[in-house]
Image 1: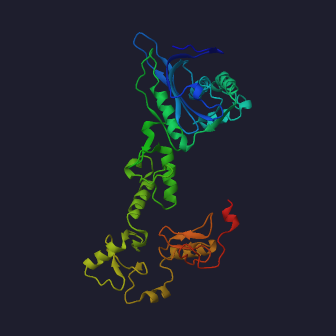
Image 2: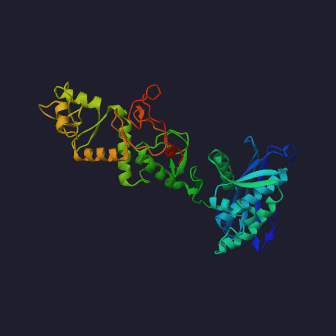
Image 3: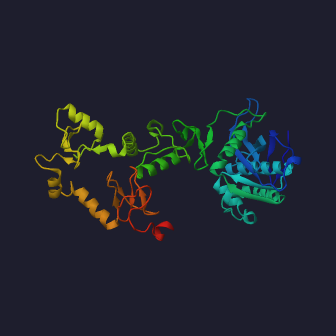
Length: 417
């Protein structure tokens, strides 16, 4: 049992503590910069029938050397007053981490904040207290706690805050788990809504609001998942796992409760498209149908109907409408493709409007898959989603990753964003 000091009528009492260390202070390099990860959780606690309940703080601390080796970890529970807020709990965890680092003989360190609000408070050590708005009782209560942090930081040669990065997420989760495991011997914790840290926004979220990606262990909160999926669908691509470097597919049944019905429909369409190679895709030209098909499938279907397919004649297997696979328009009976294109340069008014818009904005259309491309930033070497490479300025094909035209490779205004 450890006793906590009483500061400005804020009484914190340590009720349990356990820690482990893989190195002693004598093995600590005085010139090395160590990393401190911390987590403080506030939770309601129920006592036995004969005792009063209360509010507890679970604290987890992980300290690593510059090689990302864990040299110390701690799991402690604290009993606090009933109005302790989440930010105060995180500050108490930071105090525990700095105190442990001091006891280990560490002289230089960085401590990693998962909360941007806490980071903003502590990024300027001289004006940390002034960073508070002083408008709420919650912020006023934090002043003495921040003062304790400031006093501890002054005892190190170097002690600076940093936001948790993606490559630090493992240690952040480890501190989270230590904080959740911290239990008081005086009170028994009830079942509560478990929290989990989103690996994208680094915020604590109820487990029920976390999204699991199929075929990988990555999870993120529903808000991040929704934003990621919306962006990818707007880009015309099938969303993958939002975790950097992971290419696992996001299953529709996993996110059906996160997306609107309209987005679910678009996602279904993208999944269907992804199963068909880009150059093998064909859409039924009849506006009331627009069914997505594979050129191979529609050819086999047309042949099964005993139709002559050598002249480009095909039949949609959904609406059964005849169309030309070459012109991608309803079947032009007794008229060659060249004659039809001469009479009808645009298959519909929408195509004419798109062509006019593309000319005004200098967009380029891929000659292989007809995908319209608008360059926002970057060089003029375009690699279409179908794999075709060409010059954005004139449309000339790139061969073996080399331009076949003399157009400039980039415009400085598009490179410097």
